[in-house]
Image (cartoon, rainbow, N blue to C red):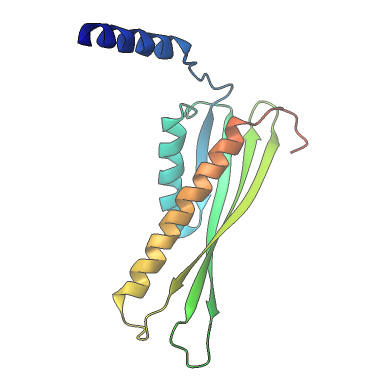
Length: 161
């Protein structure tokens, strides 16, 4: 009886493997300098690794991604006695895809992500700095994934952006 169950499971696994469709990207991209100082370097590394993992990175491609990332902060005082002040980190990217063959911009992308964290009472606590670094990295990760999904679904090659 167990041999029959194993054979059925093997047959099902062959069917599942046979039904999978491999993704073949329609175009590949290369990265240009990404502005934003240290944050730009971190975003560049994240974006580069995601482009490679999706199979859409090619250093000799005609489609060049020009991008920048910025992080801003807003302070929110949530109650009268100021026991739970929060700070919001706003991460914004702007990216464009430049077609070197047509010598024009074929796609413009802008997006932003926001996250809060609770501020500790003393400004010298390292937990505030670690929270900001962590949130900036998480926001850069989320924005790079959103950018890549929009690039994968990019349809036309016209120069009207």
